[in-house]
Image: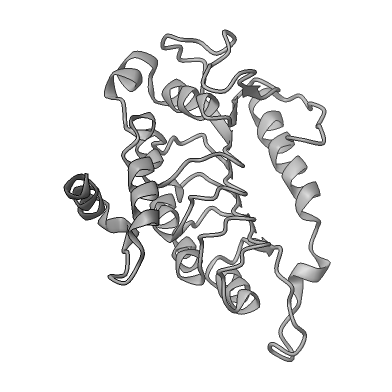
Length: 251
């Protein structure tokens, strides 16, 4: 058993465990990283196509997705099962535009199943306990499409991971509140807004003493929730020319 665990730790060097760390958390996390439920399934993508393969993966793990030209979310009623309303064979009319993976157990290796698609503009990863700095580095794959990103409530993310988001040139709104491992959040927020001129960072408590004379744009900015609604509405209007109602849970 020890040799097996040691092998898993070596294979998961991304975790970057310190030598003094206890073996118990290594066992738990490494086994989860090697759970077959998170492995990439090439047959699924070949059979469904990239967009629907991602949808099946996210929905089966408790998340939700939305497609272009369809004004509602698809989510599972029972964990692990994809509803019959989602095609189980390739259909070129289903193009992914939004992923809500909040409160799910997705982790670094899960992104092998979430390839970048050009129509994806909305990505919610809030309150995901296994999302860490290494995961954020992989988000650069979505830099040409994602405009909205919610990372709030992710306990493993640090300022080092947030710094990698400067690559996401299309980003217009970023939420980073309630992230206990992030140091100097106001400074990180200002640096990201400087490196991403078109992006507003939400969830940052900007201290007026941080940098006297700095334009406090976030205080006067449109609320995060209103922007979230408008973004998804604009996406839908752009695709179909019609407005759809919003809900208090997902927009």
